[in-house]
Image (cartoon, rainbow, N blue to C red; front, top):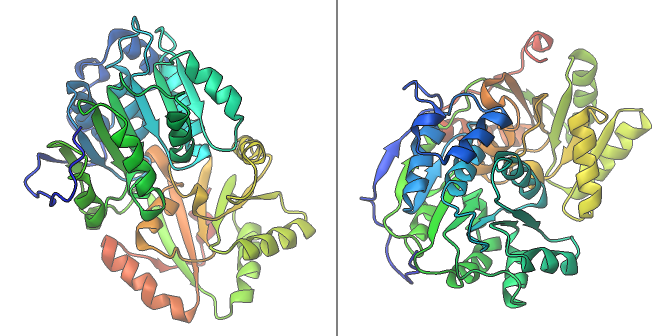
Length: 400
């Protein structure tokens, strides 16, 4: 890793095009994965590697920098966990892998995968995120775990306190890299990267990597292998996209109630841009006895964790959220995503609707739009070279 200030983006980096499915017939056995990690991979339930895993895992194991982009639900978490874990020397009690995620929920999900995959090894792992006890986090890090999964703010805090040892880091992974390199996180990420050895491998993974983000990679990556798809090739297979033209904003509640009465669905996420509107929708649905909850950034970590567990178990059927849950969260029975509001940034659209239809399952995304939103919806269609049709009368036959 080399943090190079001001260097221009180089367009001639090693690049590998990828599709969503493993068409080569390769198995995990052929990817160079450490034998004990391989046992954990199969024990966790992985059967055949996805194409992003086929391409990214060997590149990570080689030790070079990697930039990888693939549509949501194709196995990016498996790719960077399996690859980075295979590089760990578990006879050396040093922190060797740092995985950075933008949210606590995503950190917990990655932590679960790492714990499962390392079940046949001596690899140790801790989670270190905001909203948890600082003393307990410091105590966990003092044992020098092989893997640390952290949010950027807590990682910096622990580095400054001298609790997160970075001198032996082999690999730094940034999950949801476009978010990690946005203005909200960029300064924190730069601070973290300046504290790690220049020889450390840097791996970036995301469903979307805008050009401005790719330009930033040249500042801190050394000739990375790129596994990229063009944004017009990012349309999510297996997800049918529709819109409902709602003439007045206050009618959107009625549309959601009608949808819920019409279709049979296990779980549904409704994305709303404004916290106040989330609370208004939550109280209206509660008053009508809907099994609903909401997650926003200001709810404490323990509450958010409990809500996610209830949602996964089916106790909660409708989850209202801001874009906090747009990235990386995998709900097995989630087949419907509703955009109460269109996302403010077009790149977020693919993350939101990617919560349904994961790993080849079918999914439906419904966008509630007013007349003023139709032009923006067309822009999203053009950007992703996709088709968002008006919702048909037989929507009940398409969801479930």
